[in-house]
Length: 249
Image (cartoon, rainbow, N blue to C red; front, side, top):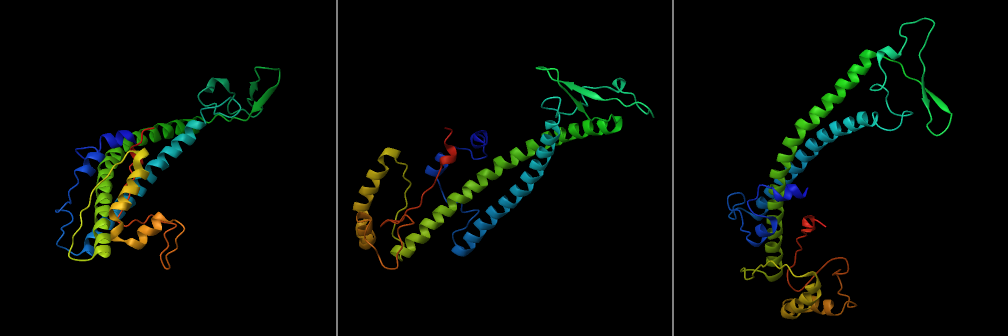
């Protein structure tokens, strides 16, 4: 998956894309209503998700069938297939009076187990052909699927960041009203500095929402009609962009 991130169709890495983000006017013209922009973003992501489900289901089906056949060739002689071990010459075939029994001798004692195995050349041939076909199909589908993932991961990521930007704009208008008079910014603090940064931001912007700021300073304060316990709310507009998928550790 990290190979996918490194080779995605964005010409720069994801963090650089964020820090240099510009609204894509060609894809999402800002002159159209916000509802239309939101619907276009949702439609794009929904289509990617539907295609992903279809493609991954087809690939996983082949992969699962192949693994099931491969499991038959693994394990000890009591459970695995004997098709690649015994040969036609080891059996008395088409006899009315004789039948060949296969015996598995334990290596650590004198006990043995009789295996039921019927030599059918046609069936064994079909199993081998099916195994080769599934292995070939898996190899043929892997390349196109990986290329599709690289392209559409980028498309989905770009759409996701546009959704974040759209939410910042809408929430800011709802809070501060018109005409538009606010500035959006991207912050990436050191993990150890997050709490200190929160405290500073709350002090700087507490005048924008005195009631919410007071509730932050006093967690025990209850604001009627406003449930803050299960969500992050600050006197400034805040949306988190979680890039933990980039954490190789």
